[in-house]
Amino acid sequence: MSYSIAVMNRQDLPQATDIDREAFPTMIPATNFDHEINSPLAHYIVARKDEGKPGGGQYIIGFAGFWAMAGEAHIVNIAVRERHRHRGIGELLLIALIDLALKVGCHLVTLEVRASNTAAHNLYYKYGFILVGMRRGYYSDNKEDAVIMTLESIRTAPFHEKLKQLKRAHYNKWHSPLKQVAR
Ligand SMILES: CC(C)(COP(=O)(O)OP(=O)(O)OC[C@H]1O[C@@H](n2cnc3c(N)ncnc32)[C@H](O)[C@@H]1OP(=O)(O)O)[C@@H](O)C(=O)NCCC(=O)NCCS
Image (cartoon, rainbow, N blue to C red):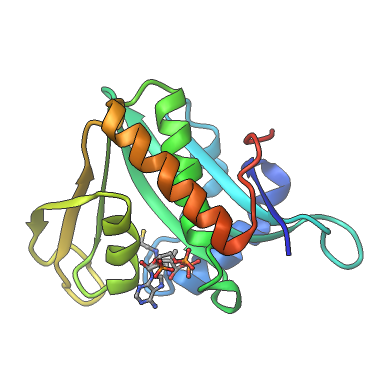
């Protein structure tokens, strides 16, 4: 199966909202994607199934986004439809986010994630994020702590080499090339 990454547009919003609700059911209020994609600071992307949705339209299987502020890319979320997980899509979205962060001039990527979310922690560790701090009781639904993870120095030669290797390994495993992010 082949996927492509594209900048999130208005047609993607209903599916992005469905995926957001499935992935973060206790987060209130739900993400207002309409507001998000209109912010000049926000950068949102989607992963689409290349063959399109039965009956027409594009089938979205995941999305991700960050806010670029003062040279830092703050990842807001990455989510993949539950039934499409464990197939490299989350990683593909993270690769695309890092590429986009580089493209818009960021030098660092950072995020907050639930302390219990080991799947996400592993994904971020794989790309060199390190744990830099903790926000106690950050999540209002269950007062869970957030851990702050940061990927520093994304503009350095060693990181470019690491990213190249990780992209190659991802391609060899999933045969899903990351095409140019399309509008
Ligand atoms: C986190 C999430 C985006 C991962 O997406 P995915 O498509 O299933 O992940 P991938 O198949 O690309 O896996 C990439 C890496 O993530 C890690 N990972 C993913 N799922 C994992 C799991 N269940 N347990 C442990 N590690 C896991 C692994 O390091 C994996 O690399 P590997 O294949 O070399 O082991 C997905 O689980 C999700 O949408 N979760 C709900 C939303 C969420 O919590 N988002 C993160 C907070 S912003």
